[in-house]
Image 1 (cartoon, rainbow, N blue to C red):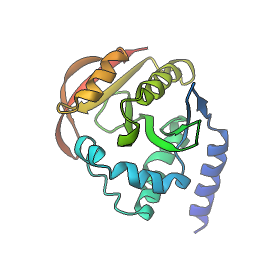
Image 2: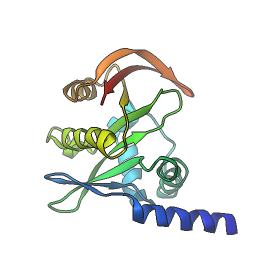
Image 3: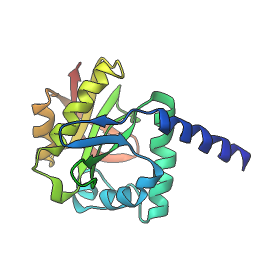
Image 4: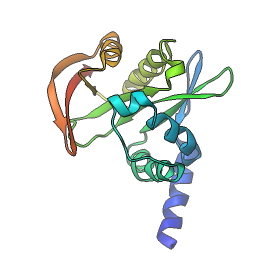
Length: 186
């Protein structure tokens, strides 16, 4: 119990130190356990399940555990991870965009997902292009990777607009899907 309490105190302190980013229309802020309901909704949307896969987040408690076990430790280790994208106009959570240290991908991976009603409005481009710049200027990264399934032409187009180049097909551990690997030098 004491170990868990220490970890939670460290993570709470970390979350107060992590930067919240702002674009013209969006807040891009670190995903926290307070976002569990939103993470549950997003990760169980038909498009996420189809293109990203089932992350076994089948209730809000599992979403909270996913945030605690997968997202927050990376923030603690690297200073960046998953960000919740929030509309400034009404403070509605509309998507996620992040810089991920994924097993099986060399370097840091840019990822993004948005609720269906917020697609095709330029939000993914706005958030992802900002995080690409932050990767270089704020986190001092020299290169980013990105992966997507071949059927996800929308993600491919966005990655190409961001200056990513297709490198090869690949797979990652514990995922049988054939993935398209993209890279971008910063």
